[in-house]
Length: 186
Picture 1 (cartoon, rainbow, N blue to C red):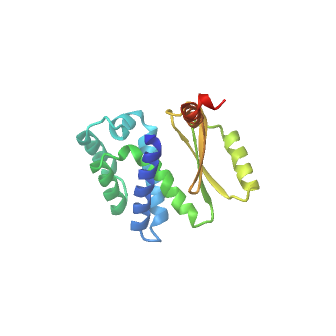
Picture 2: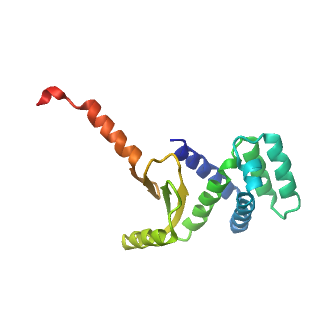
Picture 3: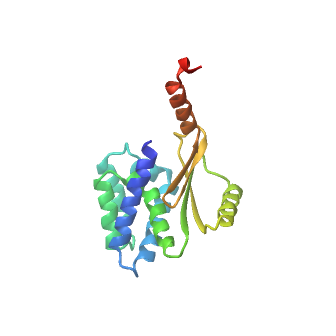
């Protein structure tokens, strides 16, 4: 599933940015990263021109230079965005921002929880999940991500542990069972 690998790659980029920043710069960079993500993801034109995998690198560069030109963005974050552009990873900016936020919260004794579903979950359902996790002794920071490749169900990543309750996994398990079933055993 490419989604999980994108999340892994986003985590690597987020950690690199986090570790490159000085301790006193991390919160400022996190805020600037979040603002940049909001700016780009809230505008349909920016989504198509900058965050799309299909958009040409030259077009992305022109738009980014225009967007970043007048902003008070720090040199480290500006260089980081250019690195994403060069490596064709700008489409990961939202996931990188989420992973960066997790790193920030880790120092505050929160546990990173990623809830991956076919569509966004309601705030009410996220609060219910939060309550269940707290009853289990977990102080969660929950991020709900969409993955349209899931047929149904969800993936719940708590720290480094993954609970796969997707229909994809269930169908795969059934396929393996049928494939390995020995008819002559009865």
